[in-house]
Image (tube, rainbow, N blue to C red; front, top):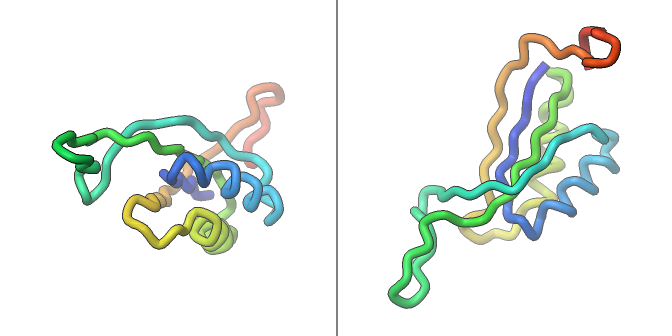
Length: 105
């Protein structure tokens, strides 16, 4: 299993979530975050905004589904401007359902 975490523009959150659901990846977690990337924030006039609003979408999938999830997120979140976001993929050792204690997704 892999955990895919995408940090994206807030205005693209609903599009990404919708496209993941259409691609048959309905389960995910999302939340609002603050951060900055390579550009170190945004300069507007004389004011530097070094923490920008972003959305994080997290989804855990089987190893063979990672490429499909990455493609779906990249297509849905793309604007071709700096700050489109970043995707991180990490291994997941195990997952368990709280209610039943069952392992797996």
